[in-house]
Amino acid sequence: RSLGAWWVSGGKRRAVRCRPRPAEGATVTTSRWHGDTTALDTLLHGQAVACRRLMGSSLKFGLLASGQADLYPRLGRTMEWDTAAGHAVLLAAGGRVDDLDGRPLRYGKPGFENPDFIASGCTFEHGPSAGKTGSASPRARS
Image: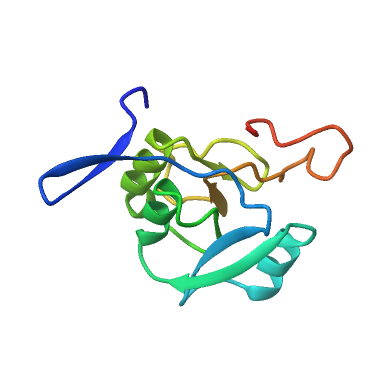
């Protein structure tokens, strides 16, 4: 994490960093093939959302890490090998990946299946303390 994240293009290295949430609302990335739209709408209720972008694969983690998107809620089956690399890049860029209770996503679980999660490059209130006055998720940042 202390080294940060970067990409190389044309022989030049450029640092990438998650962005603060835009005033007009978050750009939310979702999978084009999986997930429950009703559950997603419930999860995002009360959040300012500027747009939703449908796409496949771990590209979503890259968009969060480079500041081109803000949230990636995953409400469907994934395995640890589906998320580990993107998770590492996102953490290095200043983002996070938490389960729906606000706990950091962990690896090495029996069966290797991930719980539903929210990857974010900005503050996103969720979990037990979400929506309570004066509180935020356990690892929220400004």
